[in-house]
Length: 374
Image (cartoon, rainbow, N blue to C red; front, side, top):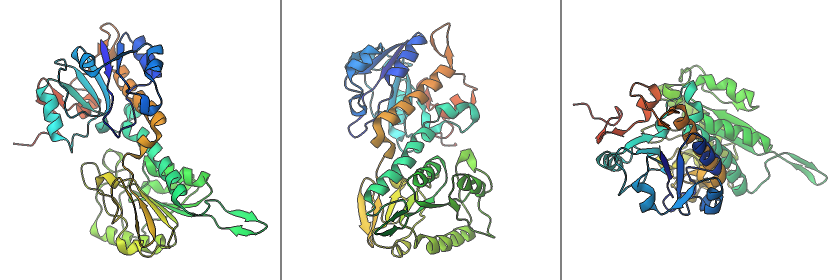
């Protein structure tokens, strides 16, 4: 059983295996081959992979006999690949229909890890959670770097420096980490979410919950652990609440995403105009259209004196740590289905996890989420 690790496209700094997981796969009875230079952007040299037991190969040789192919982002084209090989990574199937079709035509069994169900036994396999955790942390660090003032209160002989006021919009994994990081840096932190159950989570981290009162939001977690759509009445009430609160904030972190849809607009241009000059917003939904009006994915722009940071793929700016977490997610997934007698994964058609992540098999697209009803 040969496991191949691809070098990612330019701009992607992460790698889908680290020396630790190379050794773990070897312990399962698999051999690991890494594409030349795959780990350089994550500070892992070919020599370090070799020391861990991997071989270093060019892509053509890598793929010809690979049984499992690990990647971060799904490649657009895989020529010379072995029929029936398993492709595992963040394949972005909702936006890359042509690539998924290509995987089917190439005879690959493509598994999209971002569609991992949010159930207890899949927690250690959840790439969205592991990467969002780092993104939430980095969002606050980047905001602190762009903000022209200190975060904590400082009492000095020359006077007192007031603490920064940080507002987190959307309290999922990224939002919770942003709250915790902001608190560690000494900011006054507040947060909001459409899911009323997050109030206690916000308070447990020492932040102030900001919620619409007397209008029902979403009770509990919503489908798959994500927030869903809210009523027009709730949206209007939330906009009014945010308008009054955001004008007093120095830093805003927005994290709201609805899988398969454009990111909801949380901060309008009119609300931006109420913030004081020098304030900073980090929009973690920039790639999905943005939560902030005027956000530009991949760029930092200024509107009304407010800096809006729309970094793409924020977790990848912490390449070493994000690679480590991502690669462990991949290992945990494959190891959970590993048949020790045959030294290969057994992926049952009726398993809840397998059904959720499998896109293609036997030359066909098999995912219910991708198949258009007749």
